[in-house]
Amino acid sequence: MVSILKDWLNRFQQQRDSQSFAQVVAQCQTPLQGYCRRLTAGDMAMADDIAQETLISVYQQVGQLQNLDAFKSWLYRIAYRHFLHIQAKQNRWKSMTEQELEFALQQETGCGSEQQACEDERLVLQYMALLTHEERAVITLNHTLEYSHQQIASLLDMPLGTVKSHAKRGKDKLIAFSHRQQRGAA
Image (cartoon, rainbow, N blue to C red; front, side):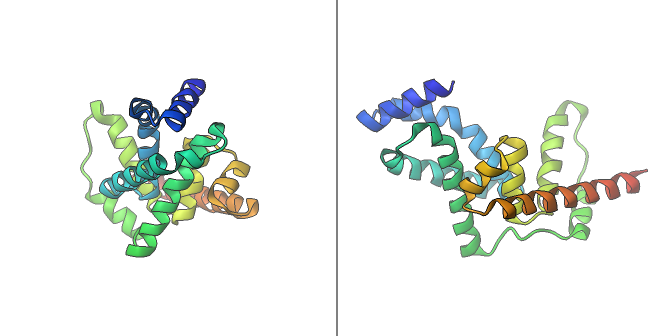
């Protein structure tokens, strides 16, 4: 699949073939939207806006990309920068306190068992709201998209030690909150 994506990118770079770019979008849109949803802790409208702005930027700048093998990392870097720009502009996505998240979880009504995947994703997004935007970015890139800490450091322009710190703090927050939730449910 990677070589097919690379072929479409190459064709688009050389010929500005819109069909090729449509294929690139088809391959990348769903993972990109998932990444953006987690960055925004479930703000679907804002995640869609970030994903759309990212794809517009990619369309405009893909000719500048020298190494097509680095396309996906480049894509996520652009998305993260759009996220940071919007966050700075609107001062949004501050992490929730645990009390705020517990209240939000108590207000939710359960989905039916046929909607378990939907419920699981909703819960993940709510848990992500506990984290800072840096922790969300690192954890999503590492656990969902399977980037190494070194790759994440390069992608987010952060020192490796900072990436590792964000990963550890984020995991610790999620584990601690999960344990408290389980004890409270028992």
